[in-house]
Image 1 (cartoon, helix red, strand yellow):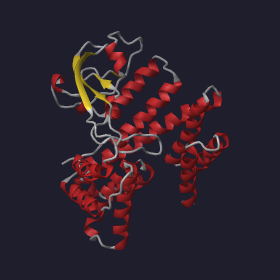
Image 2: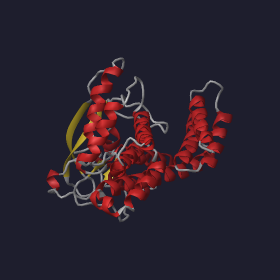
Image 3: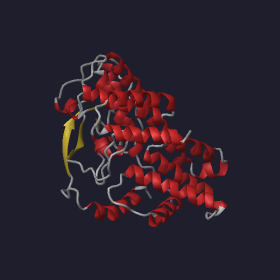
Image 4: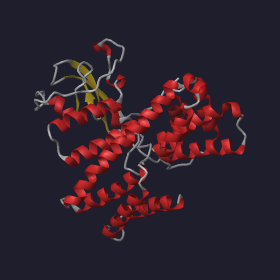
Length: 337
């Protein structure tokens, strides 16, 4: 049973709290395209006007209830795994590169003609797209954005829950107090906190602690807090019997955490280079200064995060909307010292 069951509960319970937002249904168009590399024909999804009912994370990820637009921003050929933006497929031109694209491939265990875009992991789509765009020396600003979206794709990937994990997650959700206008990022943070409080209170039988910690770690990962999730997951991996029983879930969680951090660090490196070159327009510079701080914070470099946040505050106009967000993130850092 997949974590999508918990997401369905979210949708049913939270939709009534968000009645003031647009109720227009998300439109998904399916069409066939030809791979410009191997000429294989396959079906893709085009999401028109994705909803934003999941709110926005503090690194600008906008979440959706009814679709995953991040996963569908990149199309991947199920035969050769060439990945790129839709326009690179729709132009029907061979990729302008003579490089040997060392693309990542996985065994999806289906006939190639029956593999859908949903069968191909979004982290794989982005990794291969980045390989391609780097091979043609794409713009560094574009590449930093692609790395950001790759990190979001990892965060949005749901792992397959065991029946015990599903039981715990639904139990937590039933005890959870829903409030309007709250982002998914915050919901996952609060549910992780609820599990942490329960474990600390002694209300959970010790024999079940490992299962609760696994769900706790996945809620942290889903909120974007891989720094706290990884130590919990690695401790669970060291428990031989439990790890053998839950190997797939633990390994997948660790992989997604590490992939998200990898792309965040690569995006940060490119953003820092852009800021050093001073070629950005004012609003682009403000966002880049903030993201340099936020990505430093999310990857554990709080010293650099505070430096970047301070530079952002010094640059921003007095009533710029980013000011309150930066001050909030700085307070989070200072509260943990």
